[in-house]
Length: 100
Image: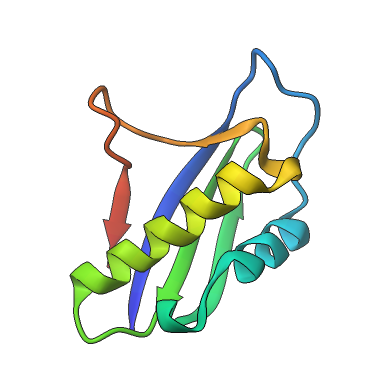
């Protein structure tokens, strides 16, 4: 199992409300597929940023990374409560992902 941490940040220019941590977990679970291997979700919530650690059961770190990114991208694109949130990225659009 690999813990993969993804950071999301609220778009302060367009933001309407904060984020409910319980609701966020529910949204992420709803966007996970069985083949993603998601086992557990942990979060560290600040006012305008959330670090989400997805614990992914996988044979390889690359597969765990891809599953975590897929789940987060799917949730950010489709879930209305996440409309004001986006994945933290560098100038090239690469997500700041930490794999422990």
